[in-house]
Image 1 (cartoon, helix red, strand yellow):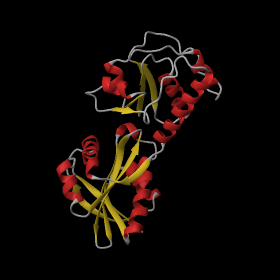
Image 2 (cartoon, helix red, strand yellow):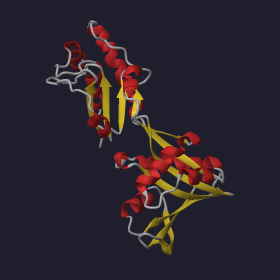
Image 3 (cartoon, rainbow, N blue to C red):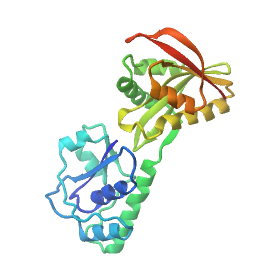
Image 4 (cartoon, rainbow, N blue to C red):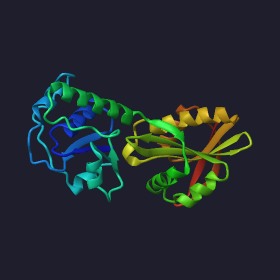
Length: 271
């Protein structure tokens, strides 16, 4: 997952955000920052002090100008003000950090520390995965996940049709984006999992396991007796995940998958 923070000069707010997120040591998360009017200046003295006061050493940081390549590198770009976000209209990965972070430029150390603390609070919110039931506003994001993960993806229309016919979607949000989802069709007290998928940029972060745990809670609330799904016989990673989450092998379907043709293993978990 590539995260980019953007402000004006890249000497105060965005480098503090970069340093703070890096200090969280999140697996598979890369962080950079840049400025719309950055010219290779060192990080501001008070920003450096504010970081040092919470044990973060960011000496030697030099501001970097924002480029199209940096924006395209990022899976999510977090701007410090609405004017920064407005300057990047046309890209679909632009977000405002919280409700915006005021520029501390010219303030004393207490102003910078207050700015640092606000940035830290917003980053803490960003890094917490949240899972909830999808609404129609999420169907486009689910379709994008399908396109990235499957050779024969469900279209946004198919996802909507499923939704209208007792298919429920749980979506995982982190860093302002829908990064993964699980779908389940309910028939009486039975739950048939349609797909479990996570964007490539957010894999190996435990998101698929979180989705399956959330699905089990959802199934209990709906009064389902079991959950079941098929998985390619050769998909060892997925099979290992399902087994760790309590799913048991109950059968096999010959030539269930096409493109390429392959048998499916049928897994079921009692709720």
